[in-house]
Amino acid sequence: MSNDIQSAVPSADDRVDLVGLSRAELTACLAGIGEKPFRTKQLWHWIYHQGETDFARMTSLSKGLRATLAERFVISRPRIADEQNSADGTRKWLLEMADGNQVEAVHIPEDDRGAVCISSQVGCTMTCRFCHTGTQTLVRNLTAGEIVGQFMVARDSYGEWPTPTDETRHLSNIVLMGMGEPLLNYEAVAQAVKIAMDPEGIAMSKRRITLSTSGYIPNMRRCAEELGIKLAVSLHAPTDEVRSAIMPVNRKFPIADLMAAMKEYQEIAGQRQYVTIEYILLKGVNDAPADARELVRLFDAAGIGVKFNLIPFNSWPGAPFETPSVKAAQDFAEVLTRAGYAAPIRIPRGRDILAACGQLRSASERQRLSRLKARLAAGIEDPDHVLPADPQES
Ligand code: SAH
Ligand code: SF4
Image (cartoon, rainbow, N blue to C red; front, side, top):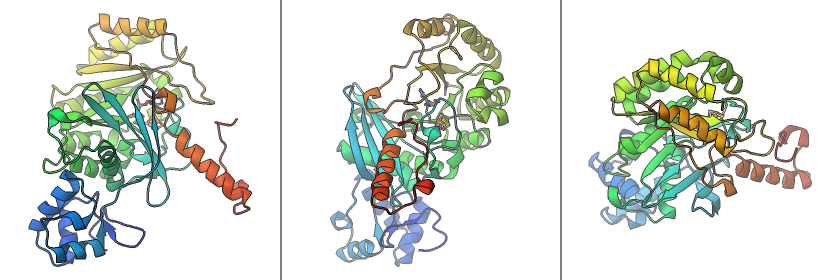
């Protein structure tokens, strides 16, 4: 593998995976086998427009070239380790990467469209207290190929290849709201998003891609400049005191700085681009009408175009918070709507399969733990070194 192909990941048999490479990197790969740059466009079309994974079926290429490609490269997908379907139509995949690490991706269907929620990291280091993903011990960044690959799995699953026109897509949106903090893995996320936006492939418009951040400010500006996708910010509290208590990231990047970063984002990405403010309602912590009034004061003064998204806390085993009553959530929403802000209360989707916001982790960790236990039972590993505390079982 040539060293200048930063994103290339060798597959199990040392063939380079082409998924996740930029066009320039793909061109470099092709140059390595003596092919001219114009082949990049052809191959790109097969991979990202047709969704083809088998070189042998790339009929616009000569048989000789198809054989050479198959010797040197692969077009892979994360392996589906498990798939679950919720009673409400939500589908969740447990996806396994080449090194055995697992993440989850979720499809949330609506009438004639739907969002695919994808992960940016295995686990998350931000340790927000209300989030199940933040309790996962195993963490690593995903590569660009592993990130865009999750969406490609969803397209495989729904047979949505070749890329349909905008109007006929069931998988119409991508939300980076799965496991991980996308701005802590900015380079790979940006490369994956650029691939998803490429008009000759997956062809997703920037207005249909949303990145959700807990407020890691340093990469927000680049995201606005280089990607211009929709931004969602997990605010979850109107004051630094409460926010720092539930989101450690706030100690380094407090609310005033975050507000300034959102304003800058909007100035760069365009005033029509609303910032979504995600707000989890945690009973007795941040769900009082006075908290809503504080939010109104904050945003009235800020001059940022925002919409709120109120998310009643989705519980998980061992969670230190409770979900507020429907009445409390409605009262909270009313303060915001009276002040002129859109503030829908999000109906959780896929709760029965632990696919709702903040619940991702359990399935993969459970599987990991049961695998470890099986190995332990066979006397292969030392329990003190491999078994993390499991809140599921405490
Ligand atoms: N790391 C990013 C994106 C992934 S989390 C972020 O934090 O924004 C996606 C959304 O789910 C965030 O708004 C997050 O705060 C929210 N979330 C986390 N745990 C939750 C829970 N238990 N109930 C409801 N929403 C939760
Ligand atoms: Fe990470 Fe987001 Fe969960 Fe916080 S809410 S721990 S940033 S995934």
